[in-house]
Image 1: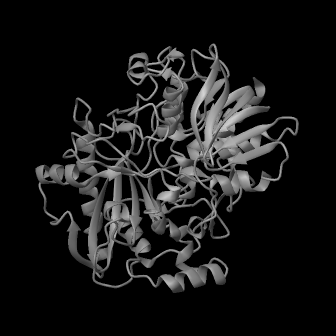
Image 2: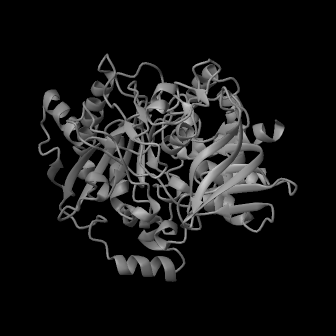
Image 3: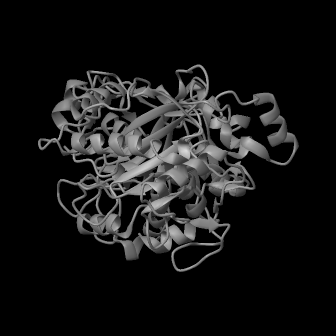
Amino acid sequence: MYDYIIIGAGSAGCVLANRLSEDPGTKVLLLEAGPRDWHPFIHMPAGLAKLVNRKGVNWDYDTAPEPHLDNRVLWWPRGKVLGGSSSINAMCYIRGVPADYDDWGRAAHGWDWSSVLPYFKRAEGNSRGGDALHGGDGPLSVSDLRHHNPLSDVFLQAAQQAGMQANPDFNGPVQAGVGLYQVTQRDGARCSSAAAYLAPVRGRPNLTVHTGALVSRITFDGRRANGVTYAMRGKAFHQPAAREVIVSGGAINSPQVLMLSGVGPADALRRHGIAVVHDAAGVGANLQDHLDICTLQHSIQPVTYDRINEPKMAFDYFLRGHKGAGSSNIAEAGGFWRSPLAPDERCDVQFHFVPAMLDDHGRHRLPGDGYTLHACFLRPRSRGRLTLASARAGDKPRIEANYLSDAEGFDLRMMVECAKVSRELFAQPAFDPFRGAPIYPERSDLSDAELVAFIRRKAESVYHPVGTCRMGDDDGAVVDASLRVRGVEGLRVVDASVMPSLPGGNTNAPTIMIAERAADLIKAA
């Protein structure tokens, strides 16, 4: 019998598998629905562009029609592979700012900045070395890009011409400004959670990893979780757990597994014929995501990644020591900006500059050469929800992101600010030698009303869903401050779903931090 069963070998699950199996007397089972991370495009950073349409490593989710985005269905890619979304993301290493975590600390005791910083540092192995804010020898390798496109430097020049400061470290004392992103890479290769935490310990005799294992439900003895039922290679299995079951499926799969197991809104579960173990109205609620608007411009110089020589790129990367454009994360440069509408001192807009034309997540290839600027509002007030579509584990849940639904309309006003500042950045002199015709939006002189229509027609997710198993000290929270599911025993959730609110930036590093801290909480129980 295993002491711990972890559901999901993603960004959090791999951390837990490593930390909980450090004690040779503790037996750990890690279950992953997807395959092993064998594909070379996972490990070559620029291969992320080729992973877009690889359904074998992607849950390939879609939202329900979004009423405030012209009833469009938005695509939500999530990693279905060892490493989870850390195996398919753009590798930007961003934490957010201390005030984000002080907000968490007010919601759940022990999650303020001073409490979480040691876990960020424990995880981080920064190539620049450790200091008061950074770890230098942690398992998650963080490094400067080996290669970047010259247009990324042009973007940085343009942003400084627009009045933004240069910032070499977005995770340093100040977040504001622009620069090249540090990335979760080791020697020019992707350093996913699987590469950082799981690969080095796969030989431990007390750690078992099963891939292709789809969990159908958690089983209970009364109100205590006592095991997991899953399907693998066409057969069904039930595996008991002596201590705890830990759900690390992410903001979509974790609430789905809980509801399939009888933990969730009682009336909704009964409609699907699911026996209620615990009536928890918050499961699937509080869904948040960063909505993103892309501005695209043609380039009159063929310097972009749109028509890169892919065989040469692969040759340079795989046969010449991870050199060249293959080591690029594509979203090389970016930054943070405080808009005129910001309610406090924190930056409220994030940029990702891409020296290529990126339409519909890169699924729609456009002719010629161009460049793209992503801009997202970091602290949306809109909230969505996730519900079951059926009682079958293999059926996708219903995702209602509910973007731009806040009663005050603040999120929409902020998205207009995002579009405006993107247009301003592309108008700077640094882009003069490259600037061709605008692509999206089609004109550079749109009114605010026209920008609203553009946003409703083109805005997309930037892949940061959180919050669907919110932690908190209040009775309405799904998990308590120790990430134990309220109302039952022997069950925790450890992943981005427990975040009470979005941090100001990308969510992978915060998810890994959550798992690092959770491992200590679990060991101390």
